[in-house]
Length: 516
Image (cartoon, rainbow, N blue to C red; front, side):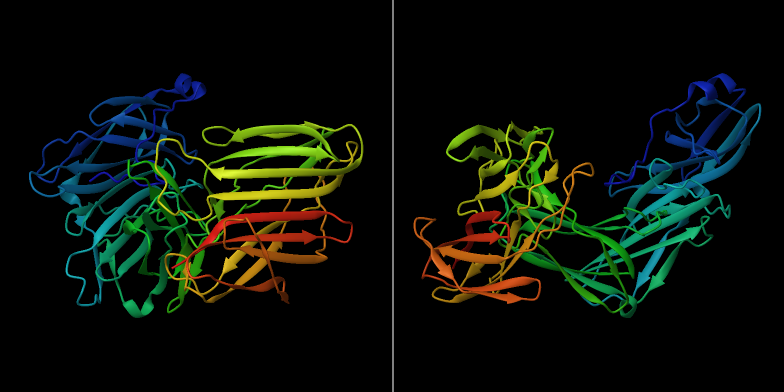
């Protein structure tokens, strides 16, 4: 069936630049025939060689074009009363001068065959996603491709040895684990497909924790992401779709892969997820990609001084550091100078792009506070959701005449030994790795390195009413703390990071992890 997955445009809108339209002196008509020889209505992508200008036209219709060489390609999809029908991918290089015509005939298609020395728990044939691309276009596949998806035996490709074409496919076998193989070729081979062995694959375990996301259903997947884009780029393998927590292992051909996660609320809305760093895997290698580990916290936004104002973008305040995804929040942001409130404002980044900016008139010590709560109208958060609230309290020197990123920090807490629901055992001790980081916010705003002088950490078992200091030990570039857990409830964590100039960063994560 026609393939619809993230990252690949199967059909492109008609795009005829004015200059090309004026120069059009020829035309092309593409006829598409099904596997029984009858005409099948399709949409044909037409790509100019070598410019990459692309057009879209219905099969059987004539399109005016400037004289030149083109690639005409399409997916000839034929439905069936039972099953998914068939897909036949085909492309033809044609010189257009005068009234040119070309036929793409699905009867010439060869089945895309992929084999794997599969374990006993894999009982069905693989699902195969295939693409034909214009090989001379630098950012393929993009709009310069056609794609289809079907069960093995129902996906075909019409052989063509032209070096102007590239063929790529992804085959996926499903059993207790998932097995995925990708391959590309120059041209469309006479016998498309390949044979793979499990011993030549790498393994990625997708560990999806429960309790931290604003919804329970998690759909995890992998996308092929070679360093140099080719006809396998973004081919997509769904790995597992279920309520968290769960783990799923996928075995893949060596190469670069992009893990991803989509989180769905009970009403069907896609409410979260993200793309962790891509992984380059070697044969025999095994790695784990985590989603939803405790504790969620601010990811990268720091205050800046510029245009004679203290500015702060209140985005990414409660997010998954493993993924780089943050949920929408509603927050109150306030700037103080001594006992004077310079500005106080309530904002939300739900369907908006807020920015806090407060004008300052004198150099001195300022205090910026943020109180953020997860916020997503229209859905009900899971009971007992972790990391629902984060607060920040920064104290730093600012001068309206000097643009700079404030010398403050963001903290990450990473508790060890939690179960897959982000729970520590009752009356246990949890070791927490604490790291303090900062990053450039704007290329036009000065960013300087700041050394940490001290780190202090507190824990609360009563929602922040009382706090108990934890012993802090330096461990490489981070710090370790141990927290004694009560018999039930949840633990809030607070850190204070200072530098030698007296700048201070206090961060609190409420319900950082649970006791179970």
